[in-house]
Length: 271
Ligand SMILES: *[C@@H]1O[C@H](CO)[C@@H](O)[C@H](O)[C@H]1NC(C)=O
Ligand SMILES: *[C@@H]1O[C@H](CO)[C@@H](O)[C@H](O)[C@H]1NC(C)=O
Ligand SMILES: *[C@@H]1O[C@H](CO)[C@@H](O)[C@H](O)[C@H]1NC(C)=O
Image (cartoon, rainbow, N blue to C red; front, side, top):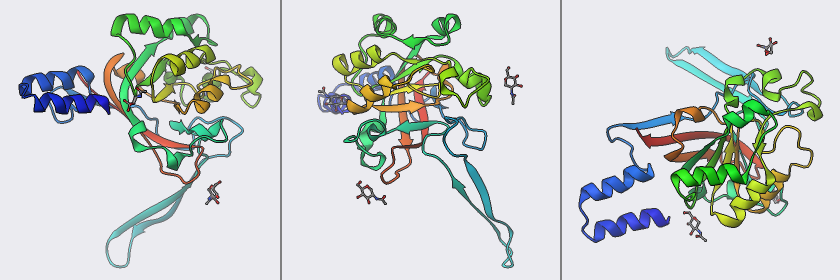
């Protein structure tokens, strides 16, 4: 990555260690083990209550062995059966684009990058079908500067407090009927703007879908996948990390031919 190369260059130039450390602090990456470094889990726990679209099959967890063995030692192992798109998970480009990368084909470098958190909670309070727009991105940039290369851009709607209540998450009493869903997402125009004007790696939402609830053609998904941008859905705890200055790692399972998969998302930043 360009940023880490410039750090190395700074070292070669003989810049003082203090300056290099300051550079690390401002970008938020690499603070592990230094005073004030915070690490926040942005994933939900995976279990039978986990949020998924209602037409996906159920998650099952089965205990295979659990107990003291004749040899005197404890032994425990289980199996689980899961749809790809459940709880905190990643959408691979092939999800909505036939020629797109499958989960196991995505270069590992794409899973890490600077975190951008765009707070749309005020807009969502007034309109549950709010879509994060270009104006929201520009407002963020006026305060924090241009969205950096390789960024992971989150919509923070405050939706995670509704989990795991499905009525509240889909904002509907008839969640089997997708025409009755109401929750926020990314506007397709905002997705296109990011593709055309910035060099991001991923977008993420704390709702069940990067498209808002009433969507029927999933346009944001289509634009995202065609542009080889990754998607994170059902992200947790966005209120615990700064709007700018975090470093995000989002590692999906390395599933052959996966269209998406369970993902552990972690934010690291200096307080
Ligand atoms: C986009 O960002 C990535 C990650 O920082 C970088 O490796 C790549 O060179 C950038 N591409 C362009 C066209 O600037
Ligand atoms: C989910 O929320 C609805 C609306 O507030 C409430 O009526 C229902 O009891 C909740 N369900 C569960 C399982 O907590
Ligand atoms: C994975 O996808 C490739 C290409 O479509 C196919 O040839 C292969 O059989 C698939 N493998 C499995 C295990 O499904």
